[in-house]
Image (cartoon, rainbow, N blue to C red; front, side, top):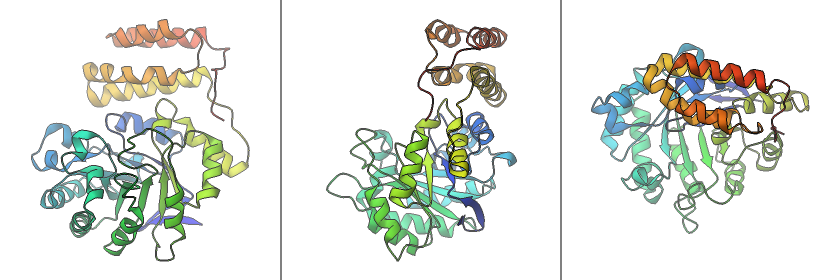
Length: 335
C-alpha cells in the first residue's frame, strides 16, 4: 500500500535519507537521489540562524527540483522563533517541513532544542502546533524514544503530536541519553504502529545498515518505511540494494570500484560547484574513506586525497584508484 504524507505519495514502503549535519547537503543528496532514495531532508537548520539571516543557515535552504520530494528540517528552543523560521523556510518551497526533536548533540539538547524537548512534552506540543499553523505544507517530526530509560514517552508524543496536526513521525530507536551508543530498540516503534489511534505514517530509524536488517525489521516492527542515515555515508547504494531486494527478493551485487570512483567523483564535482573550490575540496575529505572502504592497502591513496588541494590532481588520483583496483572486489560488501 502506498504511503502518503499529505498529498505526497511516497509509494510502497519508502526509504528516506536522514537529515545529518555537515553530511546531508545538496552534493550528498544528489548521489543518494541517483541511488533511488524516495525522500530526503536538508541538514537541520537553526531557527535562530534563519531569523537572524545567518549565511550558513540560509545556505541550507538550497533545494533543487530533482530532489523532490524533499523536506526542510528545523530546530530551536523558542516557540515564536520556530514559528518565524517556519514562515521563512516555507518560502524556499520544500514539499514539507520537519521538526527535529531527536538530535542528542550536547550543544543542541542543552540549549533546550532537539531531544531536550522530550523533557517538556507540553512545550513540544505547543511548538509543533505553532509550526503547523505557520505553513500550508505538511509538517512531520523526527524524535527519539525519550530522554532516558526512565522517560520513554514517545507513545504519548505520537498521539499528542498527531492530534495537533503532524502528518508523519520518524522515531530513532534510542533515548537521548544513549546518544548513538548501544543498539537501537524499535519495540516501542512497533507499539505505536499497533496503536489504533495512530493513523499517520510511522518511520523507523537507527542501525539499519544492511539489506537483511531492512527486510527483517520491516516485518518485525510493522513500520511504514525506514529512514537511513550513517549507513548511507559513502555508500548511497544502500537505497538501491534494499529497494531491489524488496522488489525482486534478490541480492544485488555491490558497486564495482569503477562505480565507486564515478559516484565519488560526482559527489566531489557537486561539492565544488555548490561550495566553491576551497570549501568543496576540504569538506569532501571526510567522505573518501567511506567510498573506498574495504579496498586493500587503500590508506596511501586516502592520505593523498585528504592532503591534496588541487582539483585536477585529485581527479588524477581517482583515475589511478580506478586503474589499480579495477579487478578487485572490496571486502565486506553490503548484504
